[in-house]
Image (cartoon, rainbow, N blue to C red):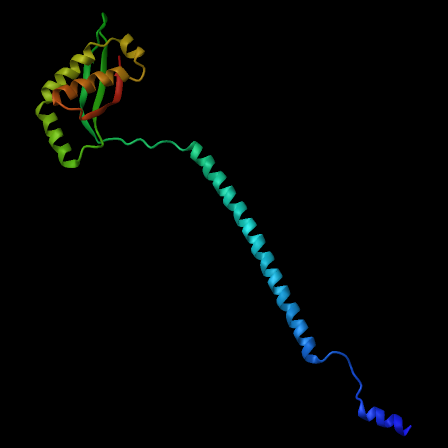
Length: 178
């Protein structure tokens, strides 16, 4: 028994792995869990982001299909109200307000000079416009549903008098055929 007591004193009992080794294993596992969860979150976020971008591109493509080309209009100037007899056997007349639409490429200073030139030649321009309007019959105006030919005739005649292609369109308002 005495020998057994000596053996107990000389050799301490082993209780398993030391505390430091356990702490290192737990820390390694914790770091591994954090790295894996971060990588998973990054992967999921990039997938969701790419799906959102694809959907946004599809929406943009859809809206581009429906988009309309923007038309650039020039400045308009009132030219006058006209009441003229039409080219008919029975007395018929046309009442219309006319506006000149100038090219949008014309600069402001040049536009003022052109308007002054229109004012200087107003009697000649009115004579030409009235002659064109009076040469039309109701059948002509009905056939020219949107007055496209009439607009072109007046525009061309005004541009001839002015000497350059200043007008891009003629605008009508208050049109009445009686």
